[in-house]
Each structure stands twice: as structure tokens, then as C-alpha cells.
Image 1 (tube, rainbow, N blue to C red):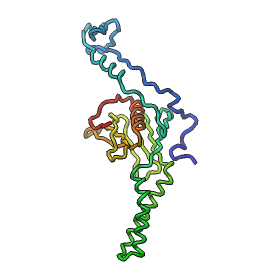
Image 2 (image 1 turned 60 degrees about the vertical axis):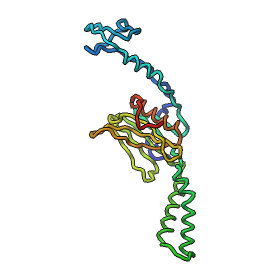
Image 3 (image 1 turned 90 degrees about the vertical axis):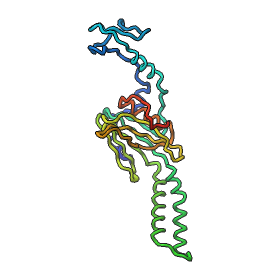
Image 4 (image 1 turned 135 degrees about the horizontal axis):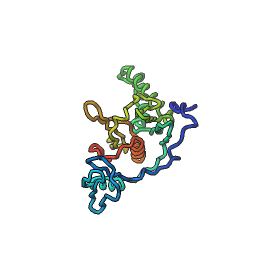
Length: 251
């Protein structure tokens, strides 16, 4: 049986890894700040970073443009696609499928919740101080939930679909996670943070421009730094977002 959200994919679908993995060439065209006319190369003094416009004869510095090109050339090395992430290009949409990991909280719940459930049942039936029946019932239901998550681990996937207008994120099965949708023209930047719970996981955040100012949206958590950096890299590349330093990032 096909996975949810994969049924609509057809033979027109093309994996991005077949398109090529190189970043676009780094270059800048110099335009006159006065008349906006593009300046010919013969009017550029690369030694002093000074140019003369052939249209309005204005002399100006283009040092900032040169520094911008140098910075992009020194940009961090491209991260190759790690195992557990698939990229597809479907009718001008970027479609990403992420195989979700079994999180530390789930592992602890799967390990200890059944033990607590069994102990609570024994205490309820044979203990000297019987407890409320709601306790073993709640613990048993919790155990079933974590066992279900363990059995369906391989089916837990996060789907990211980016079109010209929207960036949509969906988890299937949902597991109490809400679907998220953002307007592409409001996406300012993406950045990474350590999950902060000692698990070694990393969370991808997105800076969104709103009417009341910028807000930071938590998108999802992955279990390796290479996955996190790869997802940040590919989403920013598709949206044509320049990778900038964000104060909140600690990676």
C-alpha cells in the first residue's frame, strides 16, 4: 500500500538528485546607483573597486558587491543528501519526504510505561493499599500508545511540499502533530538549534515576516546534524534565500 501523500505522485516526478547538486555560480552585475544602468566591464577598476557609469558619468565604489561575491565563494561546503531524506521535483514544486526517527521520549515511554502499568495493576488487585482504578487504566492506555508508535515507527514520515505560494509541513501518522502552512513570500530565513534536551537532536526553525514583526516558527526535529543542515540548505536554495547568521542559532 502506498504511503499517505505519495499517491498523487506520477511518472512525471523527477528526483532532484538526478538534476545535479552544484550550487549556482557566484557572480554579481554592477549597476549605476544613479541611473540604474548596467556598467560595462571596461568601466570597472577591479584594483580599486571603483566604476564609472557610461550613461550618466557618475563615479562610484562597488566594494560592497565585491565583498558579497567573496563571501559567497567562501560559503560553507554543500551538504550531501543523507539517508532517510528523499527529494522530488513535481510540477515546479519541491517535495521532501523525511523518515522520522524514534525519539528519546518515545523510547523511554516504550521502556517504562508498560512496567508502570503492570505494577499499578498488581497494586490495584493485591496491594495492601489499593489505588484508584483510573491509574492502571491510564498507564495501560499510555503503554498501548507507545507500543503502537514503536510498531509503526517505519511509517512515521514528515512531508514538506513547497509551491510558488505556500510551504506546507505534514506528519503522517499525525501523532497529535498539527499540519503547518506558511506563505512563501513571508519566509525570511531558516536556522538550526540544538534540541536542548541532551538527546543530540537538532531542530529546524524558520523566521517568518508578519504584520506585527518577525516570529520564529519551530518546524520539526531530526536526529542528525547532517539531516538538519541538508534540509536547511535545500529549502533555502529552492526559495532563493541567502543563508544569513541568526542570533538564535547555536549550530
